[in-house]
Length: 160
Image 1 (cartoon, rainbow, N blue to C red):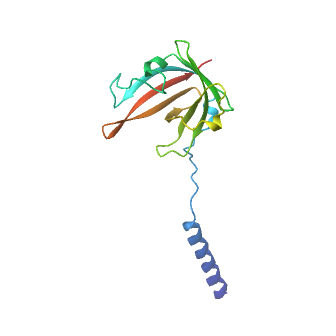
Image 2 (image 1 turned 90 degrees about the horizontal axis):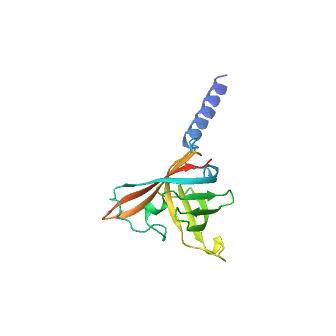
Image 3 (image 1 turned 135 degrees about the vertical axis):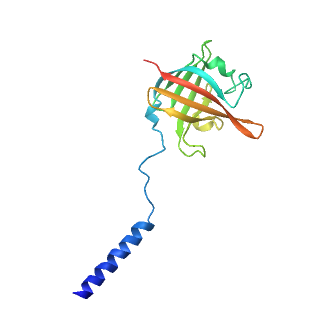
C-alpha cells in the first residue's frame, strides 16, 4: 500500500511539473477578425497625435490627409476594395488584416491600377488598428518625426 501511494505521488508530481512547463495558450486573442472590416465605411475625421496639422502634405501617395475626410471605403470579404474621395477621385485597392506587426494588428492595403494583380504589387500601406468593432474603426498611420513617432488618426463609421 505504501508503494502504491509513493508511486501515485511520483506520477502526480511529474504531471504537475510537465503541465507547469508547457506553454500556456492565450485565451484572449489580439488578432482582429477580417469580418469586422467588410462593408462600406465613411471616413469621418482625421486627427493627429504628436503631429501638428498640415505637417504631412500627402498620404497614400495621393492627397493631404484632410482630403480623405468624407471618403467612402468599400471593402469586400475577398479583399477587393475601392475608396472614393469627396472630390470623386477613386482608387481600387486590395486589403487584408496583418496580425504579425510589431505594433500589433494592422490594416494593410495596396493600390491596384488597371491590369495589376494584387500578388504582383509589392508596395502598400500599413495602419495600426486602434479600434475595430464592426460599426466603427480607428486606424493610426505612424509618421517618423525627429527620433520619435507621431500618428495620423483616421476615424471611420460603417455606412448603413
